Image 1 (cartoon, rainbow, N blue to C red):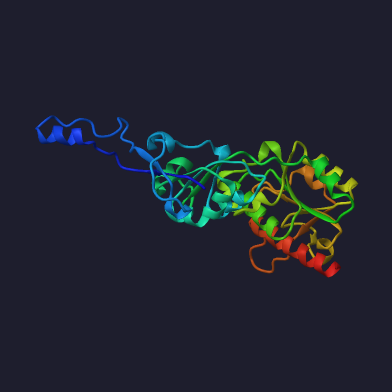
Image 2: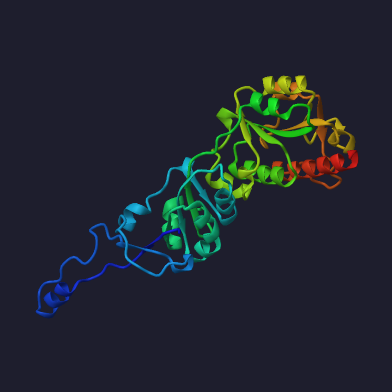
Length: 310
């Protein structure tokens, strides 16, 4: 049964009350740092009656900001992480509503949780994070290396997406979300120019991080060579591309879609390593799209193309 630690107000014993009644000078009534004490108790929504347990650390210590590389937040990303048996979760901090929603997953995994106020979660995640009442401290997922991923494919059809130095975590997360929705096999990124697989990225991925492997590599140009050796058609995207992206390109047996950063596009060696440079058909006055929107359109066309092939 999951045990929830609930912050509580400082408690004053009878001797202190008597001292004040006798005109004694008031003593310090809380921790010196101003943080409230906490009392451990079994959260009633999880089936236990309320009862005392060991006293945890003061809230001022418990709610110190977590390291960026070990934090997941947002209801969908937290729920997906709890449902993923491969994801190691160290601790959960939840509001009452989030705890009620996530109770079955917490109970099944026997994960420790702390009941917290939204302001406490703000302290954990830092300013600007939309945590929706749920924060996890996690261990990064183990990700495959490229050769192992390709060997596991055998001769099966496959689709991968490559991001060429896309550093905005919201864009990478949104691409991951679409990749999970349309059954993309893996996301390949350059190790030195990609955001950490936690925090804002995981929130934007809305659970996609738990379903699509993210393969970090050193050299994308060499990756393209290796993919072509494995019969992948490598298609790069540029709004000025000479070839229009269509069902014929989308429906190949093995395809790698390559997207560049929004400000710089595809780098020269990556562009030269692609079999084709395509542009999406955009009849309106704006010809370029946000990378996550463009990727979603491409993945949808791929799914349709695979359906037609069947």
